[in-house]
Image (cartoon, rainbow, N blue to C red; front, top):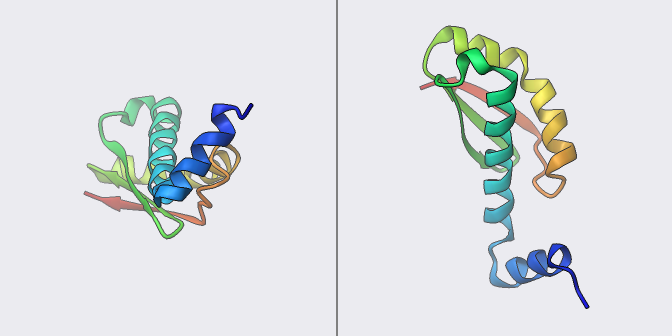
Length: 96
């Protein structure tokens, strides 16, 4: 009997939704990591989207942008371990 862990990706792939699901997972995990890593900037830093291997992080002000930029490499390493199907190639930190 197949486990849900192996069955779900197969069903999503069959329906053409695996890419969307992996993108959503990467954004959700990135936001959780950012909330833990930058608790003082929690309100100002948001993982916005993931497309074509690039995770977009939006920041409300320049201090939050600088903090997010400094920890972007650590976040990328974390996402490569937690979401291997997402293939996070780079992280772009922008001012929103």
